[in-house]
Length: 159
Image (cartoon, rainbow, N blue to C red):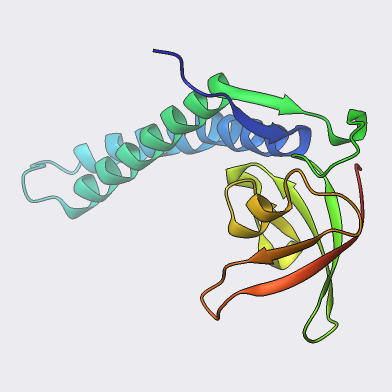
C-alpha cells in the first residue's frame, strides 16, 4: 500500500533534524543517567524518581520514532525553487479580508511547521485548502469557527 509523502519545507526539515539530534544526543543520555541514578537508590517498586525517568524515556523514544517516521516520509520542498502561476505548497500569500479590509500574509507549510502567529499555516488548514490552485485576484471563501470569511488574493510569491 503506497503512503502519501508529507510535504515540508527545507526549514521544516532542518527544525526536525535539529530536534532529533537534540533528543538522541542530549535528552536520551540524560534520561538514561537519571534512570541509573534512580536505580542506585534501591527498591524501584516504589521509586517515584525511577517511574518519572522511565516515563520521560518513553516520551523521548516515542518522539524520536515519530520524527524518524516523518523524515522518512518527507518530500522536502524548497519554496525558492518553485515557479507556479497558482498558489501551491510553499507559497507566501498576501490577502485582504473582503469584509473588514484587514490584510494578512501566510506561508503554506508542512504540518509540523505551522505557527499561525508567525504567519505559517499548515497545508491541511482550511485557509491553505481554500488558497491552493488559486491565482492573484481570485476570491476565496474560508470556513472558520466564526463563520465563512471571504478573502481576495493580492499577490503571492515563493521565498
